[in-house]
Image (cartoon, rainbow, N blue to C red; front, side, top):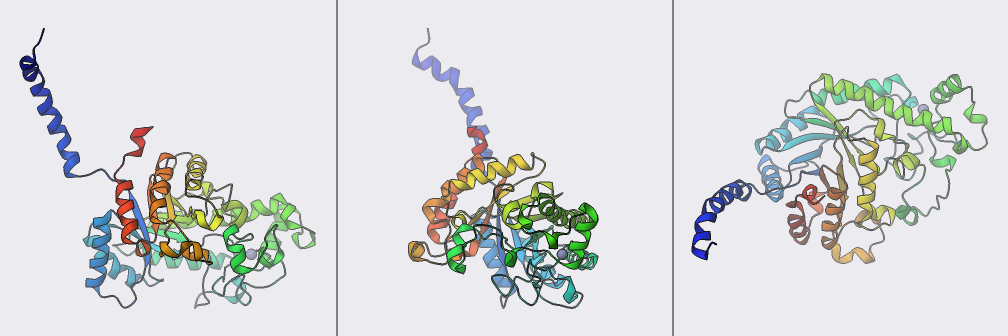
Length: 380
Ligand SMILES: [Zn+2]
């Protein structure tokens, strides 16, 4: 029988070991991986950029998806600052959406079901100038542009965006904004009926898509267009990898429940180093818990072959959210961010990507800090 005094001596060595083993965890607190979408640099000086990024790093952000145009010099300048803070630096550059510029022919733009070019009559908004994925010149333009940026030593990865067709169906939360009811595929928003796509599809399947009454019922036509995007991604992936850099993409949620249906992204077939689904629940009139359903679907679709970072859309003015008509000003309010992070991590996300750190209010950061230091995998 041990009395209290004896037990103290028995337990002392174990207590000592326990304290020792805890110490590294106390010095370096556990944290889930976090990225942030941002852009610039605008007029900001190097000092201003460094101060902003250092602040984000202190708040838990490990890497930036930085949108800075197509000039490699911009990525060299900003990348130097980001790397000096020991953060990852990804060059975030839209893919299929390209304003007219040298190296892009007018006839390379996508054509809708009414025969209208995305160059001269873009859908929804003026910048929706999508290219046709079939023209070899389109791939060559993209490969040269991304290749030049990938060669910048400070760039860790290329981050593709708008790597898709125009939304043939808009997210439900955007219908009111554009005054549309998108109960089915309409020719105005259905692309790509360029001469090359029509020709290539006929050659492949024998179907003349221009003579089909309702092309949305032709499964081969859907698959043909998924494959056009998949093919561009996988060729760009090989090209960027040949430069010794990584490549990943911002994608729509799903892929099956949303991305394939509304923007023709079959992203589970893309040879990328990571995927960043934009699980923006408010755009789909969904609650933050829905983010977890989308993550579960995406993780299953990529079969564990690549990490999935759950993209979260932050509400910049939480106090006005209920009166806001424009979904672009919606998003997660501080009390929802913990739910969205937990739902993402418990369903298999490798980490989180914020759209955007700039939109985070002090209350967001406070809730965020509580959510990111939990090891969600330990709970399973
Ligand atoms: Zn086309």
